[in-house]
Image (cartoon, rainbow, N blue to C red):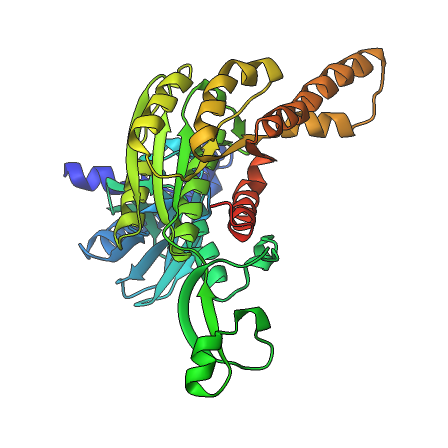
Length: 444
């Protein structure tokens, strides 16, 4: 009985009909001729009401539903969620479908209304965009079914308490991977960079064909074979590429609901995959007030999965970043000259100068690239026209902060430190471009 009452819901149609009958009963006191028709109408409605309940609850398994999601969701991307619906009644039903989303989405009004014929099935699809890594707990899929009479609804609950983890953006990673495999990276904004000079890592001796560089002719092999032979070289491989992620307070700032930290994490996953595809070794280091995690650079088959898992597990209290601890870790743990992509954020020149001595020390042993972010809100504000004196004053201050970002780039260049100043949405493309540029120049 308890389960029956929990599943039984009255529709607005029932309330409307009952209200109308009550009004007619009141009028029948003043117009007695109305009483008999109203009384019989009341009996008919009561009969339909009972029949409605019996029809809906006679089949214990009258309806089936299932929520289908990926085993993990991609952070910052639109992820597809599907709800499969199957009507097992012998009559068509009207449905209200309410999916209980995780609290992180702050959405309580996801509702679908539809009609399914007898013995038919349908699939509903919608998108969710998580903006934080972690565990997302879905509730139940609530189905409110009513038959053609429409006085009551029966509630069904399916796929209750489903936990789905949200990982760094593996969707973007796969997208760039597919573009790289098909040589279509330019579609994503990655530039074609002309290779400067040539690498000296020997691969093989082959027959000369038209177009080969005459400077690669191997005269000894030519003499032995009595035909032109040339040396073939390949890109230098097995260079170490580390993504170093600052998890301090400067990375807490949001952009389009995603924090700068999560933009850096997503970009680190993608650049690691690109490096591995280019036969380089990829590693990750994270720090805030202390070094939090380090995965040594490797190019084993499981390395990308290790990077993904490490980045997923990163948690931070957004404390003050300790660059001295970072320098000590790099000094002791990374002995081979490597490309270090440092994801951080400097809002002022003085803030960067406080850490400059550690950056210079790191740059003496490694190729350091400091990746930091444009303040897009300031840029948007500067592009708007000034309406009054206060706006002019605010624009002057905003322009000062925007100019300081450019001064930071110049200051880093003075000490041979490369930098990328980028809007968060362009972070991945600009980082890949920088990596390819440094590779083409033979700096790593």
